Image (cartoon, rainbow, N blue to C red):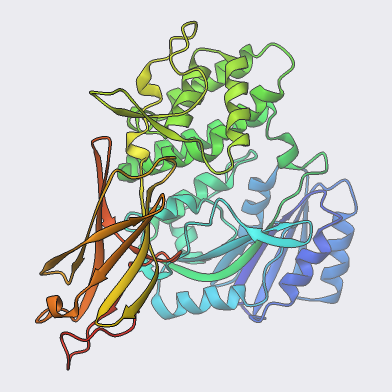
Length: 481
């Protein structure tokens, strides 16, 4: 019988973890599957565990080969796959019970080429947010595409997905050799797919593994490892430049946010001549687009500036500064007549280093924080208590204007200040007569000539605060929604 799903699992020196992985695959609620275990020349007991498992469950099969790396191991597994659908799992990770049933069901429903889902990190037996994936699956969507939902540029792993096998074969997808073999393939699949299904459910538990000679986490600061990561980055950029150039800036921004940190960590840990690492660093930065480098956050621009000048000691100081500012470094205004806003970081206008002011320019990073913290009727008035401030700015907003809007009309409100960031506003329902039925609370904040506008949020929620006026009474407000 042809299985519905084939799961390919490369195996190499993971004896402490592989049994848990295989048990999670055997426990899938979608039981019409085959699991192809490719023993990539393991030197510990991993192969024996795999064979013992296959002897007890005829859905599991073991293939042995000399050590060629995870990419070639996966390719060999794909050759043996018979299923209508194809998935990958790493042998030290865990797949939640309903993962494959959920992903396959979406593909059967929509006809998309691949389905992907949320990921959690498995850290010392506890599940945590995957920082790489945390922004991706907040808003699930079926039949979409990476060019429409560009947040999928962050979804660059192959194992939180199910693919149609005919899609995989039609495009000749293959994993390259090397450590970061999955990143180019994941990006190619997203771009080449006609449509993609995003599900909100957690479909993969990605183990954080710090020990062991084969752990990539342990080796990620090695020079050879960093060159391999650069090779993967270049491969992705070359593909995107040809097939989806509109995604290049997003990919480069992700590299600057995530990948380049490993370069910084390597330079922090380096006890020898940093020359080879600095040479590699220049290669990394030169591979990225000028637009993304220019628009990087100010603290990252400072790190890149020091990196480009080979100022390793100063870079280490900035990295330590970043680590000690858990709530984010401050942004401060400088100048009386012509005020600009700069990151409050070390070495600003240091006479020895002479770093240009625009490296510290953080004006584009200023964000308005406006939230409703409480509201109540007081006689005939509806009173609103809120908070208005600028993110990372440790000073009171100079001037605040507040208004109500139903999308057509704007009704200004009188505002009283309460403490450092508090605002109080009272609404006379008679002023809303003939409008509505739904009103939002707008705000304009001005400090030292800098102006930001936005909408009040509902407490700590991510949605705009609003209230409704019942249709039978345009002047009688209902409770907030």
